[in-house]
Amino acid sequence: MPLLINLRHLESKDLPLAGSLPLEELDIDTRDEMIEVGGALEYDLTVQLMEGGLLARGSLKVPLKCQCVRCLKEFKHDLILENWPIHVMLEGEDALPRVNDCVDLTPAVREDILLEFPQHPLCDPECRGLPKTSVGKAKTTAKKEDEPGSSPWAELNKLKL
Image (cartoon, rainbow, N blue to C red):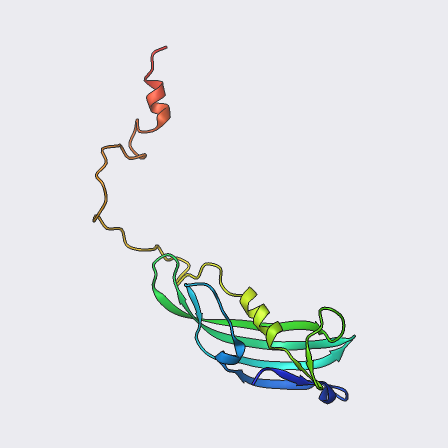
């Protein structure tokens, strides 16, 4: 069931909402091979009417299955939005669609979750990437840059002008 808010319940007081939204209802298409939603959205929100719209505040938590962009190791990451606020309009061109007296917050929640996805998921900030192997590497006879005389300036210094 989507995250529906009955506007009549908000006329007299703020509405607390807590629960989970199944992965199918959240309908997130990451279009990213490195990130996949791993389960249901857990939410704990307070919703109130405010200036022609709704103000929702609270926390969101979504488990993610990620693949490190450096070493390709799979790892789990919980995307947590603490003190998450959103103001959605009930009138005008930016208004959320109404069904009878209810408004669905799911599209707004989905958008904010997508904006918080990690851009380059790392299993560890100190990840060094895939281990270096000698298979398939061509042997080079060039000097290392740490060796004296290996820089282009050293070669220019040898010129006698």
